[in-house]
Amino acid sequence: MKGGNFGKARVPHLRPAAGFGKPGFGKPPARSEVAREQWEGDLEAFVDELEESLPNILPETETAGKTRAELAFLVDEKILELSAERGVVLPESERREVVTVLLNSFIEQQGEAASADPLSLEDEAKKNLATASKNSVTDAKDKIQPQLFEHIDPSAAMEMERPELAAEISDIVGELLADARISLNSKEQRDVVTLLLNDMLGLGPLEPLLADEQVTDIMINGKDQIYVERGGKLTLTDVHFRDEQHLLNIATRIVSAVGRRVDETQPICDARLEDGSRVNVIIPPLAIDGTSISIRKFSKQKITLDKMVETENISPNMNQVLKIAGRCRLNMLISGGTGSGKTTMLNAISRMVDEGERVVTIEDAAELQLQQPHVVRLETRPANLEGQGEITMRDLVKNALRMRPDRIILGEIRGGEAIDMLQAMNTGHDGSLGTVHANRPREALTRMENMVNMAGMHLPSKAIRTQIADAVNMIVQVARMRDGKRRVCYITEVVGMEGDVITTQDLFTYKFTGEDAQGNLTGEFVSTGVRPAFFERAEYFGLGRALMEAMG
Image (cartoon, rainbow, N blue to C red; front, side, top):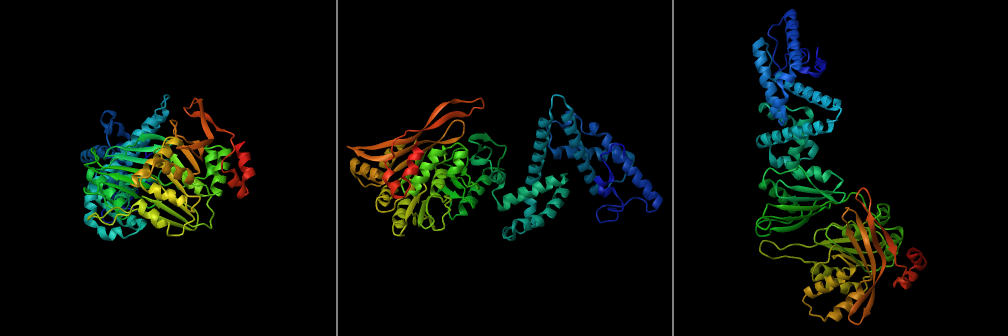
């Protein structure tokens, strides 16, 4: 052929031996061998002519900004017009095949033209083509989705494994696309099937974001505004939901999977995904601009203290001191702002827990990733529709004390459970851990005092502070800085009391020095050089010498 892009292998349905005579592929107008060859030659010449006419069929003025489906419609109209003029018999199924091949050829030509441009517009051209293809896939999915459920049993489909269901609906999708005269290539058809499966079995438009390992947070502010965090930076995605009801259905699917609900009577809910990712949902009327979902993704990569040294979140000496503190069974608070990495640090420090110890974890939505074999995981429960059956953090902490734990770990201390946690730390459960929202170590102690008061115990301030000083040994302050990197800013010891004031001493601090050409902050982790108050305890565990070496 003249164009070179339309070999018979690329249009298999135009080959009589492979297609003609099969149901739905039509037959040539004559049956003799001579007439058959003449018909094939005319058809091949017609396809060559179409390829050479692509610039006229799809002129730049008419193709700009159009989706693949719209381009396919233009090509189909031109084929019908030219076949009528020349008297060419082209069955419908073969015409659809020719449309697909012409579109692929057009896309290839566009890509070649972009790469030949000395100003290099290749990236922009590819991006535009990818956007057009994505829009075509989304439009096709929206058009055939209602019809799909007329051909399958939804209840039976929900019980099938994903690969099995994909195989079942692929053929149906192909037929529905053909009936709707929607021309897509094989990759785009597979994408349509994937989108349909995501809606049926997964979390719809969120599935690609959940599969992206670089994404650490997903923030949904209504159906059209979905942000993600990559490398500590927030970016707006092009993902969107069909409508508010579609978004609400996904939110309901998330929370119902863990036995919770979100509706007008319970418009706020904490939940988790199957992989452990933490989820918060808030719906209208509390969320004014539409349902809001915040997902803190579960990291498949296990972050250790050694890994934090490699990524410069802590220094090697800080790593050594934190390991020794964990081995010495110090009671520790991990303090930091929202998204600063408190839970990640808690998981890393918890790796120092001996495998022979019994650990009880208590969380609102279970997300801790302890590696020890003897771990009991407890999770709070909201009230039911009648307002009954709520199980709070305080209830779980009190119950944990009856479970003979060696250590208790609270995912987050945020209320009256602070008093129960302090009592646990003071009654033989050394090595307990918890996180708290605060911007500095001193503020973490103040917050603990305020949360004890939330329990309604009406204790004197000095009594509360004395209990905090006796219970808490160390505060690890983490922060997410403006370059997106998380760093440990302070490792602070709680030393004791002087009068009515809790006394502390910093073991390590982070000193900011400037910013490099890439916008990354520069600084250094500085040891204060003081003798740690828990030195005698480290000596008891045979780690005193190592501790002093780490302090420099």
